[in-house]
Length: 91
Image 1 (cartoon, rainbow, N blue to C red):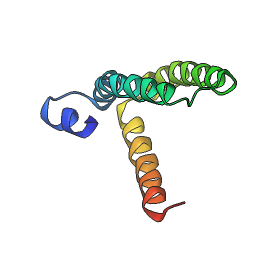
Image 2: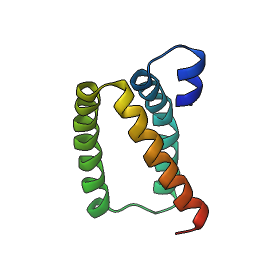
Image 3: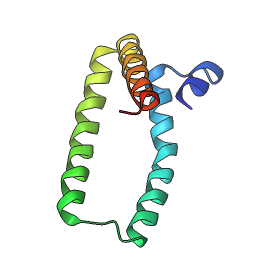
Image 4: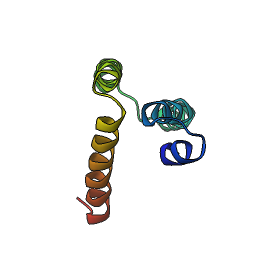
């Protein structure tokens, strides 16, 4: 989604990521509700995850604005490639 909006809509990379995260929010809420209904819920896990997400998102967005578009694009591609290869390798 990020690459599509970056290429077709003319957004810079940071804005394209922001739109992707806004769209992905609905998927995440759906998955969370589904897992909670299935009984996979623990406050001991939820609280650190939510706090980590909020703090990481805030710090990451500030750092992205500070470093600029080109740096974030490079980091995004590197991490995406490494994580994609990790998934394909089955680790």
